[in-house]
Length: 216
Image 1 (spheres, rainbow, N blue to C red):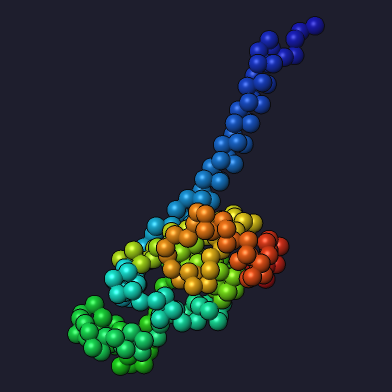
Image 2: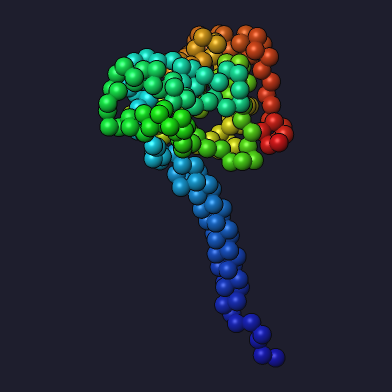
């Protein structure tokens, strides 16, 4: 009786299985790499704004508190953007004729808000509340990085679910005293290890990882 399969069939079958396994593993690796790539996370990508606002100048050099412009951060889900009146509170006195600030002056005269573009733009299916995180002792720097060092603001953290869950599962690594929340100074080492358990208790922090916490 003639052979149905050639003498190389077993070898070809093994090679096919190995090739399929390599293909599946490579596909998973590629998908993971894509999900964490700059193309998806938008890290380090500058967003063109109507006015090239410098956090380094305002927050770093002039030491303006974050809440001077983002006044709703302690009371609202949104941190809030400064109104044109806030900008003009300073710029009617300084740099009042600068060309770069013409959109601000036009906005003020026309009573039409500036249309700023979001840098940290979460998907619509993600709910994030700034006031809760501030009240629980989570520092601005944990999500936004050292903004006061940025001439032009960019997203530093990936803002992925995996990244969020790292903090939700290990809040002791991120919690800081309320007076340090808006500071970008490092708060770590022995002092953090000593105070973190007390802060977690004082702020009633729970390791909330249920889906409905962020997806509503």
